[in-house]
Length: 65
Image (cartoon, rainbow, N blue to C red; front, side):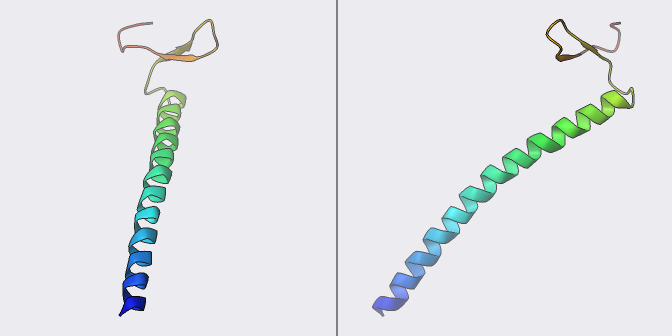
């Protein structure tokens, strides 16, 4: 009986650790996917953009030049 409780506790702990690790990885993947999508939309001229004085990309509204 004692061994089964120990195994159950270990399984619960490692399941929780796995959930936390997956959430962190999923957040990083989501950022990469969003960045790649916006970059592709800019490249295909669906989104207007320009480089500012710092060399960063600035998104423009549809009516701005």
